[in-house]
Length: 612
Image 1: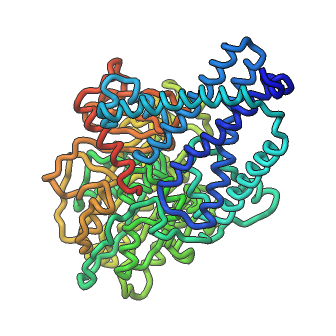
Image 2 (image 1 turned 60 degrees about the horizontal axis):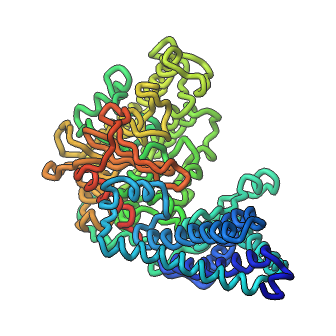
Image 3 (image 1 turned 135 degrees about the vertical axis):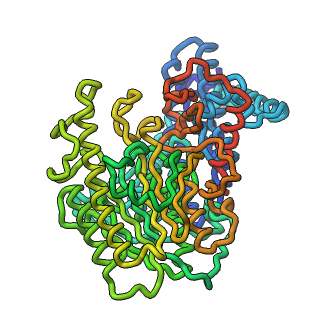
């Protein structure tokens, strides 16, 4: 033992060992910087975030090693090497996975690695497996070398270095909080680049205590050459000489597939007799943000996060704007939550949007009535010299299921209720309340349909009526939405009226992802849907869709007529893919058949299709 080791002891060796490992991990983390080009300011903030993030993550193996710092030499040595080897291998593998799949090392990847047949979905060749093993072995060898060097040259507690790193953490979190408050997208979009990064947001504090108004415009647009998105893959080509129809989309929150009947939705049901009705239709998500997002973008709800990060609007609305459409957006809920003002309607002027903040009523049912009346007044304009796109979002059937008392068609309802105490014995009164709220919104939609018919708009107006997602009432053990992918939660009605097209019913599988490319083709856009969408054309009977994909916050589902495969996408989720049968009961055997491998593999590729 040399003099320095006698002076500082084992703890001094640990400081040196940890410091060298921190530098090693920072070097590996440079792989995350290669996913796209960056602005200078953005690159600086990302470097600061990188140092901050890996300093905090490095505290985990340091703490494990510190616990054993006074134990006998060999035990201390192997515990420290094992802790830092696992940590470094994790970062190395995560960086490689992120480069290929554009997602971090998560429970889906863990499941694929440790389940028989799972590696096939990642297309692991023998050479790739050997390379992966050599990478891990190399890290372990490097750790032994670093440990040996640390024992020869221990150091005192690096006070100034730690203070400097803590200051970098504070600066990192402050930069992100400021950028989030002011919509500086070139910084906020990077919160998903680094693994396990924890962004600091203080919006609620700023509103409540600093009395800040947060309706700031985006301060910096992302140059397409420096974007992480490859969307669209080619510029849309649309015929500008063709006369364009008006387009109206009506979305009813939580409206599920079996709630389109003569008794519950008489107006929409009768309208469907002269329209095209898709009876096996699925939302692209189990919550509003993902359901509405997939309608407008025609791509997996998984892309909500990078689109939000870059404040990128949908190609669908970009094309309409280029063709001279004017817009009218009416929401009974807030346009800021979910953040549709930063995604779907990022380029729509505020003057063309009416939402909860501009409506006088304090109830969902009242606001549903108000957006109906506002739209009807708008339709009474003397003359429409250009085609229009209108979007109406009804909110009464969401959560509390509101409706005026005179629309209580289904009796035996309940007043206030608590989801925590719902069971098979008390669920029916709540279900009746939900049906009444749907019945009320159908009445409002009927007013719009009557207005369109009375003023002759139906001669040149495409009308779409659907739900953003469904709602469960313990039919299969689930309530509400946001969790799970049973048919009650993700299967929704779709009624599409196209002028000049006869009424027809369709029973083949369709998705919200199909809507945008179908409408764009109708108005003369010739670009292949595959360049901007993951959907198909609704009326193309020659395409046999085998399954649909629905997304949520931290997982996604592959759904077909036989089974539902739910894949978790975040590390904190249980690392297990769960397979449900057609009745949404978990299947005991969820081995990877060739068919399942194909579906999972194709879906995984789809997660990176529109990312660089």
